[in-house]
Length: 121
Length: 112
Image 1 (cartoon, rainbow over the protein chains, first blue to last red):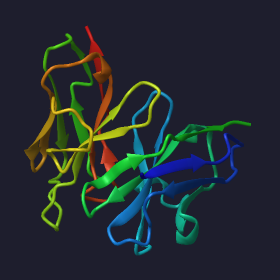
Image 2 (image 1 turned 135 degrees about the vertical axis):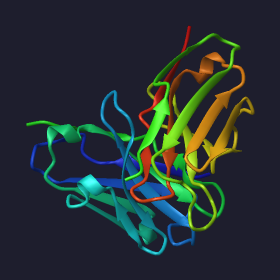
Image 3 (image 1 turned 180 degrees about the horizontal axis):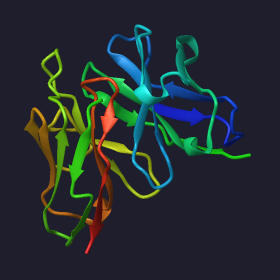
Image 4 (image 1 turned 30 degrees about the vertical axis):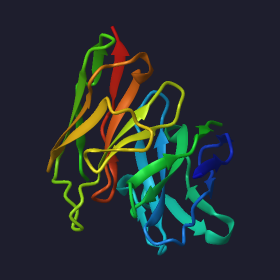
């Protein structure tokens, strides 16, 4: 069974750096065709894709946040970490991670439950 | 960036009646590998998104057959043949052909 779980601080102050961890099971990020993305959703708003890391360590970022995001993986721990610098109240959102499996279904076939982050002083 | 435009943004539907959501992309979604990575997601209230349809028209595991996807190039459609109460929520189209991946604005499906 494939599962993903997001974790991180519920509250961060403006200008701080946010670090989120996606811990997964049921697949390996060293398997060809497997990727993990981070997506966020501000309260009452639409989904926004943030970043993706692939099995071969290729990394991709959304255009508007490229300078603030870093995605990395620890294959031995089955984790993907996203850091976002210089947090602002507009970054308040639920943050999700999701798997891609290009051997079969393609993008974002399984999602985590999400973790809510509030940016406030 | 590829812009995904959904219509309508809100869809009140009578139980048992069909529903249809359109999604248009600002560029072709045909990937160099020949696939079109256009997916439909459902987000029920208070829940994370869930994959319904992948590569335009393929139902994901466990998705009822009342859901169907169609389209090509830049125009895509999600259809629900007979809406049930559990279908209430927001539906998103999403493209993963190009970077950055992008979502539509979402269509809220509600029962009349």
